[in-house]
Image (cartoon, rainbow, N blue to C red; front, side, top):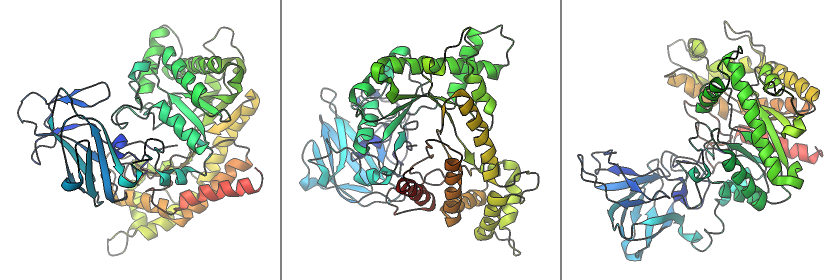
Length: 517
């Protein structure tokens, strides 16, 4: 799973840093970070005119690049290329080399820090406004249009056969409905709307990796058909395509759950079924509509398309229901519906984040003098993960035993239905559910993800999945810093040479390939 494209993404996906820049922020110097002024933007997100004078008055319109990644991006000389007329200024990590700059081509010197680069527009010619801004390392000036991905990022994702674009496409809570709502390669920054399909396909072709697409929950049939047509016409012909309708529609934290709930209630207002079952039925039907469109578009090559029905790992009943097609009077076969595989997300360790256990986690770190020691907490934490028995009120006997049961249940279902079984996400999920988690607990979970014992647990986890006959597993996710929101990245920064989770994943892949798996 590829992590979000954001100004503060440590993956540094693209050579052109502006593609990850924040949306424009109207400011008044250092006094007012956001004046709240309404900005006039063109169809690609470029500022076309200065906002009307309001209080506080806007004196610059700014964006941020490479912020909050602790300076983990290359320094040196960058070029800021742009079209149009106006004035750009640079601060924080960047300063302009005035003598080397010319209209449309500014030269900036960059010294990386956690502040990033603040790029500001201070004057605009509305008849020829500034647009098509690119921020590139100077040495890439002749290649950045054809080699758009950061070579170091390509190196880090090279071992993996399949890339799931859920976060790149900002699938969760997506407002996209019509094909015209989507981002394009010309969109100023891909942080707000997500990365366009053209760039997803380009990455798949560049890395020779199979793409896994998750379509927005409100996407029209026309949207789905256009998306599928572009992939058919542009993806390398030897690559397989995985297609999934939205992401975790069963999960009530997302807008897609609420939207599908409303559709189901409107369609079956007098149904005696409980609400969750109606939601799953509507999701099941829409999934088959999406997968059948893809099969229709690919025609004779539809075997390249793997239609995925995804479910909840902890409840096999979710997929049992969706794969029964109970919404249909005379259900078709899986093949006729374009469904080739079921998929789950067999995470482990999430129960430790239950806020009810926070005091016990703190006690694991408590020292006689009242201080907290993360190392002693880690010893108990890994005993709990491996064996259980450390938490009062928990019946866990080790996370792999719990995962084995979930996997077995879905394996049985897949075999009964004649489907492949996959993992759309997977890995550890140590994250606190508390609204304001104790920093010591956040630090404990972060340290656990950096501990060699996590790599050892990953190796056991992957072997378990493999030995039970599991198919493709898509780890969540590639590169992301640890925080109170979780320690999801296999790496924390793209310039890391290795880390326990990443090394375990890559070593497992290497061993599997060497054995002919």
